[in-house]
Image (cartoon, rainbow, N blue to C red; front, side, top):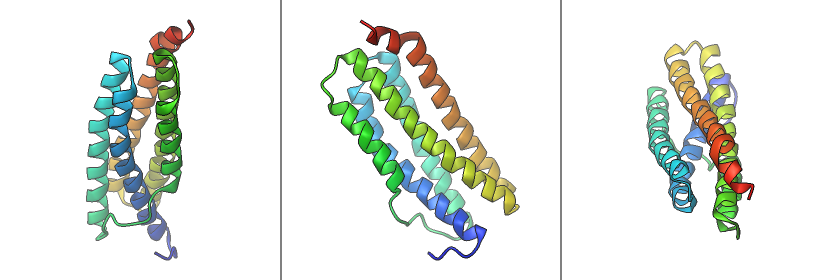
Length: 163
């Protein structure tokens, strides 16, 4: 797709986010399996369900604009997830691995928040309030996940990893 207008860039960003979400859907079950802390496992599982919903929202937004979800693979998310996969394979104490998994998950969340924030701003600029609201809702959910991960790290996981 040639980028000639802000709308072209907006559609490209939506497709990139969709690719990222689909990659996360594949990666999260591995994170669930690798986590030893029950709250962390449950948090990853809950976010897997949210992530599936995020992908559905993007499908609907793209369809609203007469677009398919087909597009290039999100290479940025691919790299961030590769780092997370490396953490899963590390030889580490369970608590230390859990701390590393939180760090990897927060990198994913921050990457997503950047993308959703840009897409929301494009939608606002284009006067597409409906899309902007949907994207803001997802952005809020991603930010909430980040906060939950920080709280879990600070109150439980990182303390257990101190030993």
